[in-house]
Length: 119
Image (cartoon, rainbow, N blue to C red):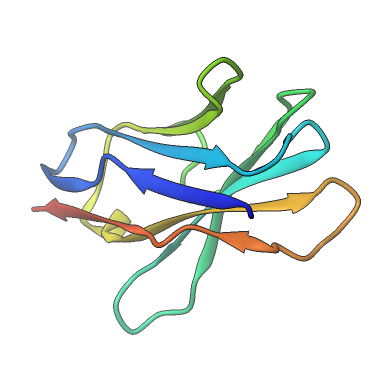
């Protein structure tokens, strides 16, 4: 059974940084893409970015490009989201998700972690 567990959320001031981590277990993820999504109050869940587990190729939403960086640690089986220059608009619950490389469906989701950016 695949499990994704996020950690690292919290409260930070505008301009600050946070690092989220997603611990992945239950299978080998070499053929998977690991993604980060977020959902702000009253808004739909939106894509933040993803990383291909094997190639480490990344992709980001325009709203976070240049501020957020996704990386993965093979030894720890974690995927991290480094968030810099945070803005109040980044306030949301952040979710880790995974899908098979050739699929467009995100099959597995974590429970989410709250990030709040104060102005």
